[in-house]
Length: 348
Image 1: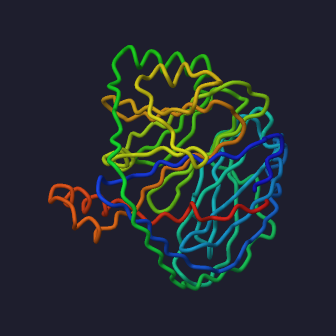
Image 2: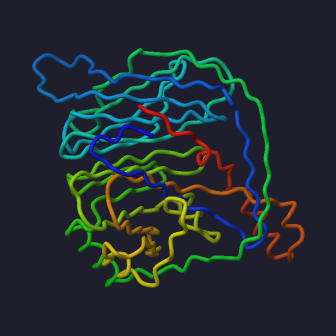
């Protein structure tokens, strides 16, 4: 488990796509057995600059075609925006955008896919909000570590029967938009994650919260959100403005919170006015420019939300009606192997 500081719990929320036909989960892994541990240390800044750089630690875990990054930083600039960069053989990969809380603390999880081969891997954190341009403020120590990815494939296929669970979209008119705006102003919604064609970003309006958003390669997303000294439920909103992100909901969806299915709310108010005794709920609101996914979380500390497509087993789908087959084959083009759920949490 990641070092949590003052945070007490770890919750995983997954959005899983299903066809109304049989479902197969296929896992293909590259086992390297390698964990690279880094300290995050301040880098030199121009003379005369007064700035709180902080420090931290991180672990890079190699599994399958993915490198997973688990990071915890503290004592950084407060309520500032940062970019987490993974460097592999001198090539930089931006893997997460982060916003610190009022204590200058942030946690992040992200992933990047690399081809098999030998790499020198390192980490950098750039401040993207304080200076005139993105500025390097923390760097991994050691600067680089060797990593060799040699692919060995192990495939397991499990087929189960699932009923169709379509997501009902709430049409977002003026009343709904007004309720969402009010929830942001009153900090019921402490943060908004935006996923657009140009990438992802985070907007935090409650300084008690730190948030990061990164890719869960190749087509998914991870959002980490944490808070200290916060009581009662809160709502996280994910604003899906790109066609690719909206396509995640073109098939039936399940929302999973800590291994248990989250029920869909029948109205937006069930999510925005959730009580601490209420179960977690989600609602999908449609507007002209975006889909808004809102998830109520009854008790707040540290949470990781994952939007993950699931692979459809076409061989099993051949048994169903032709319209279902066409839908399922179309879904294959955008669904990927679920690997992230198999990752082992390691200490940072």
